[in-house]
Each structure stands twice: as C-alpha cells, then as structure tokens.
Length: 138
Image (cartoon, rainbow, N blue to C red; front, top):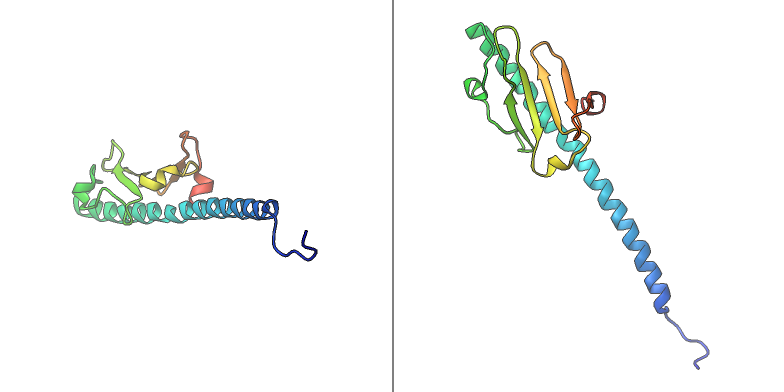
C-alpha cells in the first residue's frame, strides 16, 4: 500500500453528490414557487384593465358589457398566464371579471382563480375552489 495516497474515496464523492442534489432540488422548488407567485400579477393587471374598460363602457352605454368582445379586450392576460372572462349576469348595475390560471400557472394551487366585481370586491379561490382572497390579492 501507498503510505501517502491522495484523493477521495467513492463513498466521499457519493456523499458530496447527494448533498449537491438535495440542495439543487430545494433551490428549484423555491424558484418555481417564487415564479408562480410573481406570475399572479398578470391576473391582477388584466382584471384592473377590464375594470377600467367596463367603467368606460358603462359611461357610454349605461350598462356593463356582458362579453370581453364588447369591451375590445383579449381573452388572455397580457403575459398569457390566465384566461379571462366576464361571468354571466353582467347588467346595468354589476359585472364580475374572472381570471383563471392556465398553462404553467395552472400548477398554482393556492391562487387558481381571481375575480373582480363592479363594486370593487376582489376575491380569489384555490385549486379546491376555497376562498384564498387574503393570500392572493396582496
């Protein structure tokens, strides 16, 4: 045997590789969560825009629009992370704009759906359709 052998054993290399893999898995999960939370602003921007268009439509026609087409609005949010719609029942007194997560954002179980009503009431629901307003409308 060589008295002053240098280098690492296979066990030491495997341990280092396992530690690096665990740290990488944690970092990727944290990044994905942060990205999902950041993409929520896409829904908030879209709903705010729809609210402004609805107010303009109401000034001009004395009623809120029942469709996005009547507003000249797109059916997707600016970055495309949400599909947009007007809930049935829009009339002269009320409307409710809805943004539903789609694509990569559909994995956001905490804030799957956002709503904004003519009265200014904001709401959000998670993947189980439970109230998540406080978490989502920050």
